Image (cartoon, rainbow, N blue to C red):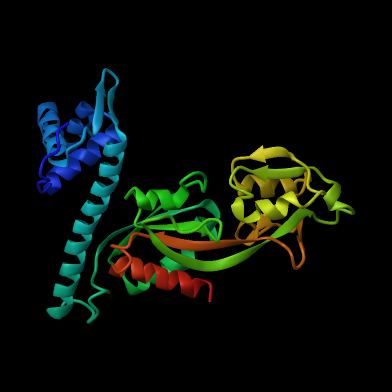
Length: 305
């Protein structure tokens, strides 16, 4: 496709682009948006001309985003989110200025706050923070999705514009991805978990799950000749804890995953050289200064104070 002078993309063009990317087809996107297929096709062709790149491969099975299309859709979702934030914060400021709010422009903001979190963070880190957020900003409606911390994980949801904030595992070997901003909220230690009262827990088979032992523990893990290969590999840390609780093995787990552990398990410290996991937040540079995101981060920090 020939290079052209870039032209402004209208919000409705961005919404159509996102819909085709999400639905993987022009007909499905048209149905989702209440448009005709020809209108969607015409819009995508116009967007491709403005961008100067083919965004979708058309085929009998639908529309598959090209690398350019995937990048464009991610940016489109983030731009549309900024437009939503513009409206929400402008209205909140207007309510505060007009005396109809609580005197705090931030407190008058309404709308959704999309949060992606891995399982143990959603279970044990977010609830208290969301409770305080509801008290200070009753107009903000959190939408929490549990995302497996594999591959791009929660940070990928933010980068792709599907979440405003991600609760993610961070660290020197797992830095904040390029293009995002974030910080550590807490450092949690790993411990040996085994059936209570077992005389030799290190002799037990290992129970593990796919998300465990990321790059922040792999080096330590490799130096431990007493840790066998996993005999049981489960889908999440809750299943691991249940297996250990019922006497089927031992596990090495981070502190969040051990919140509310039953009396049938015993938690043993791994010593001063034990591995730790950094848990933090990530967001986009554009949303980092928004009222809703700043408020959530403040309450997350307060939860761990």
